[in-house]
Image (cartoon, rainbow, N blue to C red; front, side, top):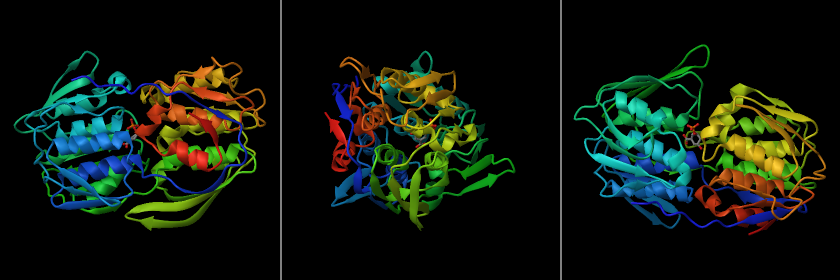
Length: 451
Ligand code: S3P
C-alpha cells in the first residue's frame, strides 16, 4: 500500500495592519493523540472534548479503529469505546500515519509487543525520519522488526509470545521515545522503567496515571527522572477536555508581537511547564505577554494569554530550555528576525530529525527573505532588523521550501506580516496536519495571508 501525497498549495503573506481579536486555539496535538490511544485501549468509555481534528490526530484515530476501538463523534464530543488493555486486534491493512511522528512512534510502542504483525507507513517526510530510536528498545523487549536499511518506514513489527520488561535510558531528549517504551510496557508483564536524563513533556505519565495505570516517577537531584510502570494493569475510560495547543498558539502570538499596534487575547492555553519555553524566551526578549487567570483543568495547568506588540531584543536561549520549546524554534527564529541585535539558539540537534531538517529549512528560509543568520551543526544565530526593512521576497521566485513541514509553512507566513516585502511559501496544505484553522483564524485577526 502506497501513501498518497496531497498536491502542493502555495501561499504568501504581506505587511499587515494591527493583529487584533480574541481567539481559542484548537486542542493540544500531544494530548489529542494520547487521548485517542489511551481511550482506545482502556476498558469502557472515554469522552473527549476539545480534540484537535488535524490530519495527524485523525490518522491516530483511524489506527485505533483498525485495531478494534470504536470511535464516534456526537456534537462536540468524541466518544471512544476501548478494547481493554492488552486486547488490541491485528489490523487488516498497514497503518498509515501520514506526516505524524508522534502517532507512528507511540503506536509502535503500543502494539509492537503484541503477538501479531503490524505494518507502519507514512508520507515522504515521515518515511525519511529515524525510527531506530523506538525500534531499538522494542527489539530489546523481544519484538521482531522488519524494515528498510537505516530503520526507516515502512516498518513491520511482530511481538514475541512473552515480551520482556526492560529498563531503558533514553539517549536523546525525546518524549516520543519515552512514551513508546512506556506504552510497550503496558502489555508486558512486570515493571518497565524509563530513565530520562532531561525532562521532556510528561503528558504520557500524567494521562496514564489518570487512566488508572500503576505508574510512579522519581526525580533525582539533577532533574533526571525514572518512570516505572507495572504492565498488564487495567485502564479505565476517562473524560478529557483537551486544552489549547501552546505550539499552535506560538504563531498568532509571535504575529501579535512583531506587527505594530497588535493586541490579541488567546484563551485556554496549556501551560504545562514542559511546554512553556517559548513564552519564557520571548519574555526575556522583552515581549509583552500577560498570563491571565492561571488555573488547573483536568490535571494540567491552563491560562489565557494577552499579547501586545513589543520591541524585542536578541538573547541567548539556554540550551537546557530546548526540550520545553523544541517545536517552537522556527517561529522563534522569525521573532528574532525582528529583534534588535543577535539571538543565539543552541542545543538544537533534535531539530535535524523533525518533519524536516528544521535547522536547515529555517536557515534557508531566513536567507531567502534577506535575514542575516548563521547555521551551525546544532545552533543558529539570527541578527534581527526591528523595522523589517529589506526583509521578505524581493522577487517572485524567492519562495520558502517547506519540505512537508507544517511549522515551517506557518512560521514564514507569520514572517511576511511584518516584512517590507511579501513572504512566499511553496505549500500551505501541510498546515492541516496540526492546525487546519490557521488560515481562517489568522485572516480573522487581520493577517494579510493569501492562498
Ligand atoms: C511530541 C514530542 C516531541 C515533539 C512532537 C510531539 C510528543 O518529539 O517534537 O511534536 O507528543 O511526544 P520528540 O520526542 O521527537 O522530541
